[in-house]
Image (cartoon, rainbow, N blue to C red):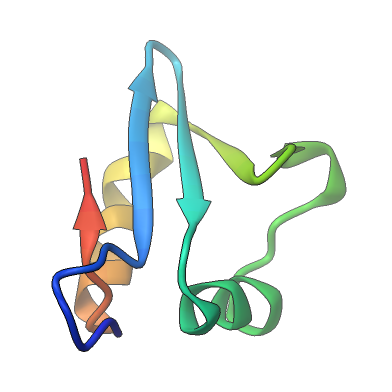
Length: 70
């Protein structure tokens, strides 16, 4: 829910795993409170998602008003 052109999430496809990096405070808060991201999914500052679920997550994040950089 970025108010500038700043991306809330940086999304990168890596074959069968896509990574999502929350960049803004609102994105980080959303991940903590509204997404069920498990500890094992975290790789430093980003979390991994199976490619079969990634497009649905992208659509859901955009539906919430977040700006994604892909």
